[in-house]
Image (cartoon, rainbow, N blue to C red; front, side):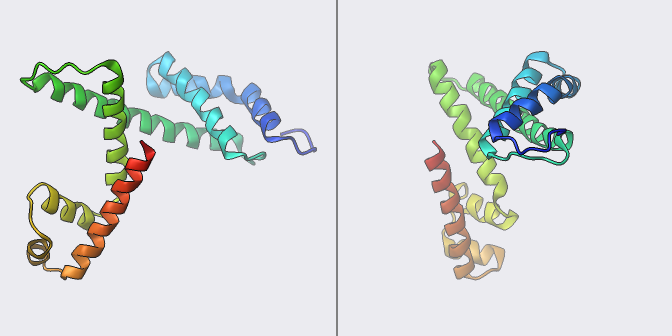
Length: 170
């Protein structure tokens, strides 16, 4: 920023947009390989900054790059989940044909679950899988993993809190 006066957040973001949007868009085009996706992520980057209510950054390009990278990573994760959803749907022998709205809701829910699941520790994931997929009770899980029953209960509580958080996001 060349101005010595403190700008409002929206004025600051507007100035940042004018000065750096072209550069960010070009950088994202190279990274994404798709002009439309790059444009979406460039705009989402500035929206995210507006939501943060920050009115000063020492190194704007570094900050823009960090925000844009995180958005791009989430974009690719969502695309991967979307692809897996459609592949799974195609493999089912059902006549079920979800509406576009149902597909969007399902994909967003799967994305949220994946994000939350990735925040769990490896042991929490293992306990959850043993409980929900292999249908072991807590005592069986404790014995299998050679940990206390209290630890299983505590870690499942964390998993359930994580699940409740997902449900509140929807």
